[in-house]
Length: 88
Image (cartoon, rainbow, N blue to C red):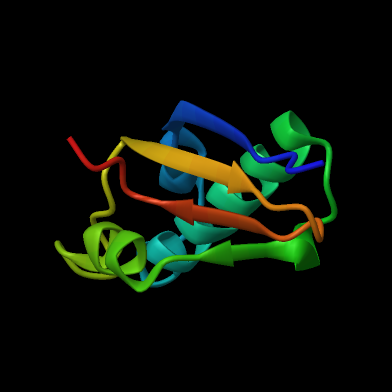
C-alpha cells in the first residue's frame, strides 16, 4: 500500500524576530522543522529539509530571514518527511 501524504503549508516565521540577529536564520529552520513535525505528526529527526529551501531562508543573510515561507511536505512510506519549496 503506497501511502504518501503531501501537504502545502505556509509557515509563519515571526518568532525569529525574538532571537538575536545572529541566530535568526538558524531559528527559522528550527521553526520549519517544528511546524512540520507538529502538523504531520512526526518526530523532528525524521524530517529532511531540501537545500533549496535552506537557500531560500538564508537568501537575505542570517539576520533577515523571511517572515513566512511556503513549503511542500511529503511523507513517504518509511516515515521520512521531505520538506521543499512548492514547484509552481
